[in-house]
Every structure is written in C-alpha cells, then in structure tokens.
Length: 254
Image 1 (tube, rainbow, N blue to C red):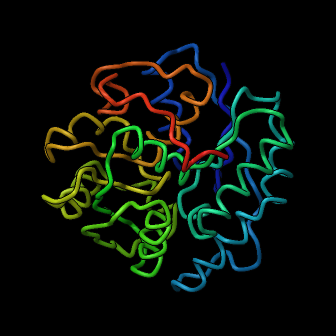
Image 2 (image 1 turned 60 degrees about the horizontal axis):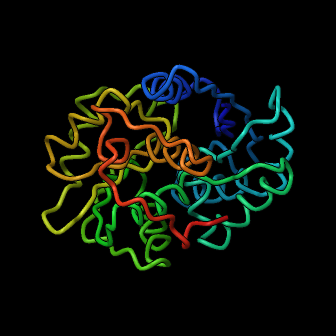
Image 3 (image 1 turned 45 degrees about the horizontal axis):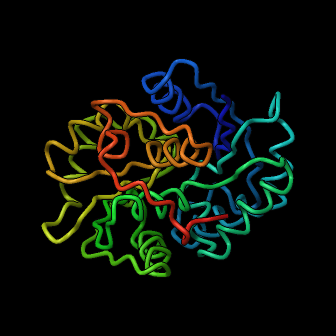
C-alpha cells in the first residue's frame, strides 16, 4: 500500500509522516512529491503568506507535481493545511478532484481530512491551536464554518516559515495545544504539517482530555480510510483507537 503525499517544502516534516506510517503498519509505504512555489513565496506578511499558499495550491501545480511520483500511489493527498483551506471548501474539493482525475486514485488534502475526521468523531465545536497569523487562522475557521463546524476558541502563534516550524520542540507544540484548548470544544486542532507531532499524539490527548487532531495524523488517517484500510493502534490518539464512529462523511468527499 502506497500513500502519495504532495508536500509544500522539501525536508521539513516528511519524517514525521514516515514515523506515523511506520508505527501504524510497517507495510505502509509513503512517497513525496513537491509542487513549485509561485512568485509570492518568501513574503513574511500575512497577506503575502495567504497569496503564496493560494498560488502553490493551484490545481494545475498539484497535478504537474504528481507526475514526479516514482510509481502511481494507491491514494494521494495534498499534505498542507493552509494551501488547501485558503481556497475555501469548493477550492479544496477542486484540488482533490483534479488529483483524482489525473492519477485515477482516491484523492484528498489535509483540510478535507480535518472535515472527515471531525465528522467521524461527531465533533461540531472545535478549538484552534494555530501556528499562523490571526488572518490565516480566521481563514481556517471560515473553512470549517462552511460545513457547520463552530470554532469556539482560537490562538494564533504568528510563527514564521515551515523551516522554523519543523524545529519546534515537543514542549513548544504542547504549550500551543494547551493554550488553544477550551472547555466548550469537542476537539483541539493543530493545523500544520511541518510540526513533528507523532510522538505527542497520546500525551496531548491525555493532557487536554479530548481528541487532539494534528495535521499529520488526520492526513494519514483520511488517506488510509479512503482505501478502507484504516489501522487501529494504541497510543496515537482517538482517530487511531478504533473508538470513533465509523460514518463516511459526505461533506469532505472529493
């Protein structure tokens, strides 16, 4: 079984995806391909960051990058949160639809995976522990609102590049999750695939007392679920515990 992940920047959080797949099932293979950034890349202001992630998420950039997979994967996902939710729900579905048509396999993205995971858990109220600028965090909340998911609390770390985010320590990630948690939320979301969260999945849920959905975890879970091959593994959070309601969400279909 081969997961094909389109990833925004080389040598950031790919090892975290590989570790999660290894812990779930060593037989799961994962391959990466990298779309090209557009002219807005490198800007540090919020408007520039939004422009950059919208550019790289253009469906034609994704399908062109998908041609670089060594072999056609069994399922493909655009493994970037902001690069999919900034185009809204229709835009995220268009990205997945273009990839599915191009490769002839099931396709999704991290943002669509969040919707699938929330519906599987039956969670309609969330808290956002966001690394982004407040403007980008608000875009993610608006994306969730399109499917009726309410953001009851959000924090924004205003962090820099994915290069910096890939170096965040477990303590810093945990601190952000704790700051983002809220009693009224049914789940806490950490939307960033450069963060190394796999070793923390069980600990974060134990600390916060509710499901914690990291970008890496939902991306892998959703890809496997689309193949009907969702594994159950202790210590990796609610999604992989086998305890979640097994409904197939309609809102996140590609």
